[in-house]
Amino acid sequence: MSKEKSGSWGQVTEQALEKLLERKGVERSKKGTLQRGYLEPNPWDDSYGKANFLVSRENVMRLARGISDMNPLYVDYEYAKKSQWGEMVIPPGLLAYGETVNGATDGFPGCHTIWRGVEFEWSQQMLADQPYNISTHLNDAKLVDSKFAGGKAAIQEYETVARTLGGDQVGAYRTSWHRFSRKKATGASKYDKMSRHVWTEDELESVWEEYRTHNLKNRRGNEPLYFEDVEIGTKVPHLIKGPVTMTSKLAFEFLRGAGGWLVGHELAMQLWDESPNLAIRNEENVPEPPLAIHWTNERCEKYLGMPGAYEAGYERLHWYTQLLMSWMGDHGLMRNLKVDFLAFHWQGDAIRLHAEVTDKRVENGEHLI
Image (tube, rainbow, N blue to C red; front, side, top):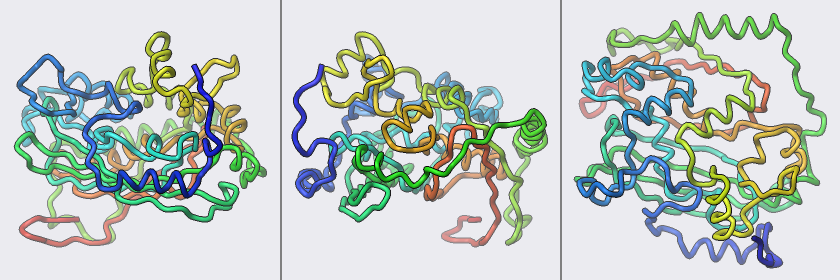
């Protein structure tokens, strides 16, 4: 299933950068191997035209379970139909799944990927059963010095734009990625002295109690939050997530169902035939996709020199939107979210998310907080 790898495979090189930059600014609407097979219109229904992104009501409910956010706008059609949106709402962070390519798959073959940051912009609420046209392009790429990566790494930046079939932009999504050699990172670990926390029963019960008193209780729902009632300095009720487990990560990874790299048996064989150098080898020497590295502590130690498995970033985006959607209620609209990933969120960790109102203004007739 494999073919001979070139001398630059798995390395960050000037030649690989030059080849990647040939695609700079090129709009790509065809999904790559990682993204294909997910959240697409029925191919036999001509009414969707050239749309390449659609989330059905059933998928919205499945996705909500995967991110563990049971907002009734996501899971209760009758409730959502009576809201101002008139339809089930797509969780805002799912715009991320419209991208057709990203830094995990584009350029620098054989190199590992870590997410640096992301910025969302929404101009409309994205709704279930609505078809969208989405395309992604490379904004820029460059080489940088990196102690973690053993000397040299690359930064890649992408932009994804979602439009209605009529051409109106509903959202944009910008990402930044860190690419590096797995072998060099393994020999340059900065996490050698980290230890894993073993939870006591009392500590776990304290987390469950926060779930009950914060996550499940602090949801505004259909009660409006008025602009006039929000003051600068207002604190948003915090949210807690975790402790992260392999099960919680897999529930999230498979929220869209099988597709892309998350396939097995004949489909996996076809993926390896198409991309023979994509896979890592698991404990039984069987090929698995690179994203399987961060499912277990042992694999992260072996391939990356890290002390354990980690949550890769996508799941965290939905925790931020859950925090804000629960606070602003059904009548609000997420307009912008910028997240910088400054540290790893390790398996076994719990995390609290906090927010505070720092500004409020009226701009072009819109009341922004």
